[in-house]
Image (tube, rainbow, N blue to C red):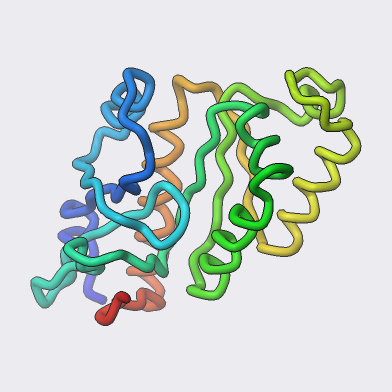
Length: 185
């Protein structure tokens, strides 16, 4: 792709936010800190993806339908307590989501706000999940789904979401690996 086309595509970028992400005051602050336009739509997996206008004038993803992203996706959790619920009570659903992302070729980032490995290892969370079980569950997911795990403060999650999605989009545009999903189901 020509550098001018890449620049235009990047300038047209908008973040796709899954409709299951509840819009709270916290979410509004995160969306504002994206410093990009965003659009709520139904994503087949995860909470955030990116869309852009391609050189032929078409959109990378047709957001009038359920979107199956092939670019990077981000699953965001607001705390270790929320993540613990996904690793225990709703583990099957959580893993099915990662399986769909992996099968679509979408790099997966799991962003956890207000957390660190040290919090996990020390058991600094409300759950009764044993720290070693928590650690093993997360590292297993990282290996099984080629999952990129990111810990951050709530205040920086919007900026990280933008940077990850934009960098992935730029790399795909530069190296020609961008796949346009024309037939989302």
